Length: 488
Image (cartoon, rainbow, N blue to C red):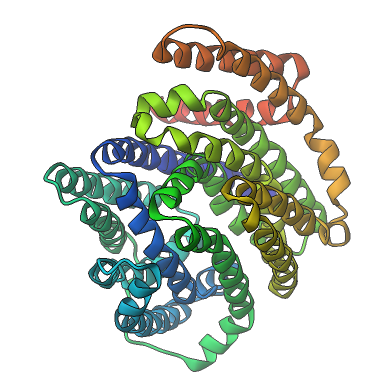
């Protein structure tokens, strides 16, 4: 078996386990979130959304790009992992101390005194995340993604029990806090028991400097992305109220859930694979092209289908008290449609070691995004949400632009490759949306829309011979054939 066949096999196996992990774990998480949404009020969700902004920004410093640097570095050894582990623990402790001391200031800023204790307890996930980050980098480096399956499953199930039990007993916002903490804790514990690498008190400044030259640019990029991504929540929470923030976040959570389930596994598998062939432009273009087409083929019908069935879905799943989040869900679906383009191109840039270029692009994207945010605020929260759509489209153009030079695969060629997927998805969306006008009860309408949408998309895939469909079908066939061979 040659080098390309070997990496192709690893990608296929990794994608299988990674998709399995995401689908199972997020399926359980989604079910739990529906129960919690019924038991907990929107304004309590809004409180968590306010402090999550500061937790997310802190986590960027903890991860600091070193996890990605460990994966990208072809000769990374145990000393590299030990060094990054100690460095991230120290950074996490410093950040938690800062958050602990600043909790009263943050609470005063939002006029919510109860945020003080919530932030001080919830902030402990920063320390847990610093441990988990290195473990995840080690597993990704080995491309043994079945370990993620077991660790994520353990964390998801444990957090589900804790979250639902506490919500049922009336703990409100604290149920959400301890659900997240338990998820992180169990994920890390399972990985600690399963992987060969164990942390040791061994630190090398030389190793840290070597990784820092690549990682600091990703840190800056991640910080820009996270601050920018949370600016919307920061503005909504301050200008409007926690209920509006909860509705916006809940509307955003549904397309994000689907995107993470599809793009997340593909991204976690393809980045190590791209890094492995980083010196082969032809191979890089083939892999990027396949990633872009396959991701959009799987992700787009799920997103557009969800936008078409949003009203009956929200009403049935989390009751009419959340019905005002439908408009935010649909707008955020449009924004998320551009994610496969940004993701595929961004991964390629980082895989070839051009984190400097990634940083420059991110600065441009975020500056434009901030201007769009500021310009949309006077016109209301709906306009603000649409401004994010324009920002995501602009980001996809920026991410694709350099790859014309790197692998001779520019934005217009990418759009040409995506045209068949665009046509098939628009037809499917229109059919499903029209079914929504039937005067029947919500449950029957939702089931009918999902079934008809699936049939229409499958028929279009066969008639149009969509490349994404053919690739997915071939990979499933290989997996089933391999499984059959093993059983014999």
